[in-house]
Amino acid sequence: MYVRKSRVNNGRILLSFVVGYRQDGKVKQKYIEHIGYLDELEKIYDDPMAHFKEIAKQRTKETKNEPISIDVNVSLPTSSNRKNLGYTFLQRVYYSLELDLFLNKKQLKENINYRFHDVIRLLTYSRILDPSSIKTTHENKAVYFEKFDLSLKDIYRSLDKLLALKDELLIHLYHIISSIYGIDTSHTYYDCTNYYFEIDYNDNDETNSHGETVKPGLRKRGVSKEHRPHPLVTMALLLDNQGIPISYDIFPGNESEKVTLRPLLNKAKSKYQLDKVIIVADRALNTSDNIFYNNSNHDGYIYSKSLKGADSEFVGWALADDLSQSQNNIKSRVHTFDITIQRKGKRNTKVTVIQKQVVYYSAKFANKARYQRELVIDKAKSLIDNPGKYTRATSVGAAGYVKNINYDKKTGAIIAKDLSLDISKIKEEAKFDGYYAIVTSETHMSDTEIIDRYKGLWKIEESFKIMKSEFKARPVYLSTEDHIRAHFLICYLALVFIRLLERSVNYQYSPAQLIQAMNDYSCLYLDQNYYVFDYKDEILNSLEKVFNLDLSRKFMTQMNIRNLLRRPKQR
Image (cartoon, helix red, strand yellow):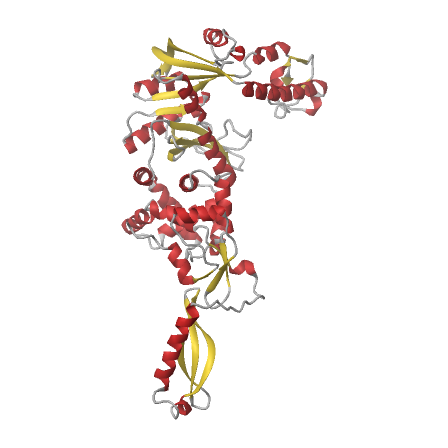
């Protein structure tokens, strides 16, 4: 509170008590009380200004310890005044990773004339809290407490700048995460997924004057994880033993995931100077070439193995003992055998492999397999009875259990002729119910440790689920290759942030729960520079303790809030 002098229409000077505050970065004043005209007050006090300044000072001290009284303008729509502050926890992760220092340094070097690191903050926070297109993200930027004074053009330009920094950024993140949070690369989890684009045609390949492909197009039709007909891109992801992302890459959608492991792992080992890496992956990566690569590169592997597609010798050994009737439902062996690998474009080179092979039986897996197969059999029976209701596309799965099935090449319609259920195939597959096989280069590991390590693969499957559901990473509404690749770099950053947050609260809450809590923690502007907070839960309490923040006040000033968002002092 202070004393303000105002000259009124009659020329006299009026003294008043006024409170100053900030709103939207501007200094404003609120009238409290008229004191009187200066010429009349001079007849009473030797120095009216000094006298009332002292009173104002005393009142300011008193009001700090009194309840706040605020006039709320209820006519204002609350949605326009509500600001998200849940992103303060993402901001703490951002600062802990020193991304502001990294990006500001690059901004100076590249002579970027806008706040580059603000663009990356906005895109990353929004991908987690309010995922949408670039245009919508820009339109909704006012939802955050801070002002992101950025144009849409700034954001699009930043995508190109960010992509150019990808390798440096991944190295920076790896070393910072390793030093602060710790990274365990004793076992790394690897898998691929794909993302679709709502477009009709593949991207064209770049060719040279001889018609040879110089650079393949990125968006290509391939084997979709969601059985979609759209062009795709493939993302390969590498996690550490605790589920923290350590690297990724993007490949054309028509490229087999079997060949993605080698280039990504080579890059990661070179960039991060890793020693031996043991890759844990599903059976899609279990190829002769990958096994040879892991062995010859002085790394290791733990892959699942399909019993249905295995050779007769392996199947005979796996099923020789009825593990479903055994007290010990696990068996293993160290086996030496030959594999054929590709060299100089020809698959004719034989190499010898020493491998530990583990087979185990689970009644839970058996029940699940039987249940799922019964659903497919029911569909196959329906197809046999009513073939006109199905096509090549809609009969996927069930067609495998139907004999003599054929399709019209033009329409995809089923040609109904002597359709019958393939009983022998059903019985053959039933033999494997409940059995699971895992193979590894690590012959010294115990059976249970191998199984436990493989079961950790759910971490990477969940990471893909987070990006597709929580982050809405697909479909992708960008067209240039650089912008598409930058989009997935932002998705990767968002995944790093949410995984580190999840770890900070000891995995008590899921990513979805953390995101919901951060979205719910928002404030409503009232008056006189005060904001009211009307939501708090146990998740916010946990995050508050982790980051040593005080969120106990229901009412905060702009300065209080800015202190929460400020970069913490280096310890």
